[in-house]
Image (tube, rainbow, N blue to C red; front, side, top):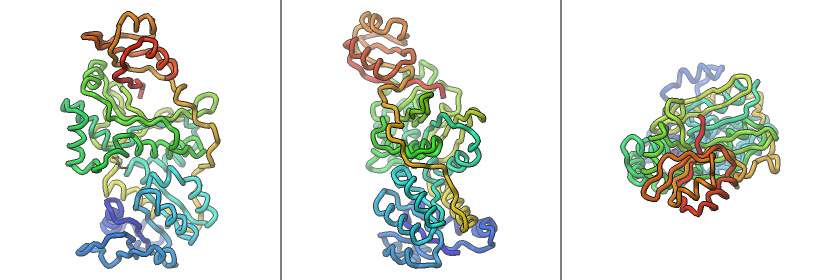
Amino acid sequence: MFVAIMGYGVVGSGVAALLKCNREIISRRTGKNETVDIKYILDLREFPGDENEKLIIHDFSIIENDPEVGIVVETMGGLHPAYEFVLACLKAGKSVATSNKELVAEKGCELLRVAAENNVNFMFEASVGGGIPIIRPITRCLSANEIYEVAGILNGTTNFILTKMFSENVSFESALAEAQKLGYAEKDPSADVDGIDALRKICILASLCFGNHVYPRGIHTEGIRNIKPEDVEYARQMDSVIKLIASASKDSSGKINILVSPAIIKNGGPMASTGGVFNAVLVRGNAVGDVVFYGRGAGDMPTASAVVADIIDCALHSDVTKRFGWDDEIPGQVAPYSGFTAPFYVRAQGNREITEKVFGNAAEFISAGAGELVFRTQPMPVSELEAKLSETGCKILSVIRITDY
Ligand code: HSE
């Protein structure tokens, strides 16, 4: 059977390499003993000297109009023109396997609907957690559960930076420079360090766990730019680390609390132990309890592992559309961030007596010297925390939620 790859970057070339390296195994697993051959690779660039140079095309309509191509891999990234191309492929009766989290976070529900209307499949295992199996586990293996929370370290670049800040006592800026040198972080690292990449991924997981599309817009998203060596030191004193955590949970009224922000996490658990570029995802179900998935969240071959598994699944299910239980958004389903409740770590400059008076028993001081106050609060909604902090008159240097993951 023939496939086409749209986007010959890190992941697209990984897909081509994996299809070649595991050719026999893959052909056995398609259930048809047919080889999976790449017919076209769509990219804007030329690749002189590349072993797949002859497969490179620049005109999408060649793929769209070729009935021999039954499965298309989308590894271009970005929303446009990936969305238009994927839509056209599905409408032309071709299944699509994508690693593009922006596309899935923005258009997942619609593309699944179009796939079903055209009796084909839209698959996106690689869009969250790279090579970590997480989409199928949530939608198949855990489908008997009511899942009430999903949370994780969903961005490898920021986890690398934070791990380095803890292990080598370096600043955010110098850890970021190291991540860029090693090729983990982009020249413009904002999608990673400002939490946008993790936001897209948690929106996909929340949509699957809770059954209705959760869009990225309007969701509280904080990155790691403001984490200072002082915060690292105080977290260490609390026998904890700081991780960029994306989390989504459903409260008793059915509202979804979803956010991306740094979090202080006690040492010893699976999240705190997830170091370097690794990712971890925690799923909490009412029957299964806590399940944690861990592995490589990025990179050519780990991500290709998930994309090629989707190709095989598409080949195995060429006559049936797989359902993901992903319906339209329910307006108002996301709870406002002001109601998000947690204990918080606060670092501030101000008067201890006034702060003690305002917080009463709700604040436990970790340190209070040289005009700098550091304390942790009892669980309280963000709105209450903000009101109290403003009453203290303190200059706020850092506020980080404390989690129990
Ligand atoms: N920039 C992402 C990361 C790549 O650092 O995790 C995978 O989505």
